Length: 307
Image 1 (spheres, one colour):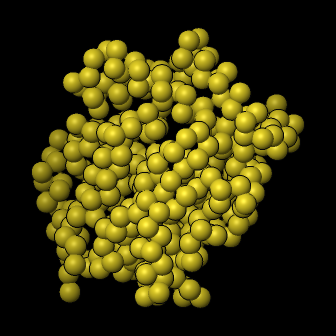
Image 2 (tube, rainbow, N blue to C red; image 1 turned 30 degrees about the vertical axis):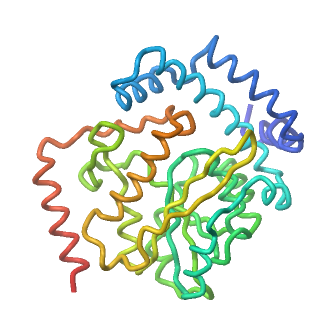
């Protein structure tokens, strides 16, 4: 069955249903994943055991079960995201300490909003442009299916967010903007190139981290703000901000990346079930000459950004 048929016959009609009804599907799906078919079970087990080497088999099993329940809720909430209204999004996302963003806007300061795939990020993609004064911007890679890529980005952008292809980022930021922008960056995906990644300890293991957030901050003098999405209860989230820097040029090489990655780690350690353990996060091998690589990266960084 084609993607177009699936969208119009199943996904779109499902998105019109109340969340209370949709969560029944989530309950059924999570039961299947926990008791019948373990979706990406080997990947989940591998990630959890490496991240929590001191936890017992039973503790790992408990986190895995909780993850599947949350994961199924996120899938269902993603479907609901196609049709959810602004009114309902405002009701379901509580924003704390918004004054951090407001002050930056008053200073005419553009900002990078950085986090990870923790709790519900898709609702924020839709809601960002009406929750905050900055023009919302999202960076993403296109899906392999052109129809799904077009439809999902249309729905994500329906409240005003501008979706930018990752390969067009350089040209996009060269333009002058009518007002300050806030670019949403989810920085916890596995980087495409080990040698261009920032390597650091994350969840008890050497991890390749995307360096794009730090580069953008230095290239364009963007403020960097980390945000955490907390799950208040099913279908309700609370968003909190932490200012990393509004003067990136004063930050040392790796400082911004270290800070936002450690803040994500803190959130994961507090409630591990809310992170996407089904992603192949550690598929990049640690380079044999890591010390030399880091020295080279640091030297190149300062040659670009030291005046």
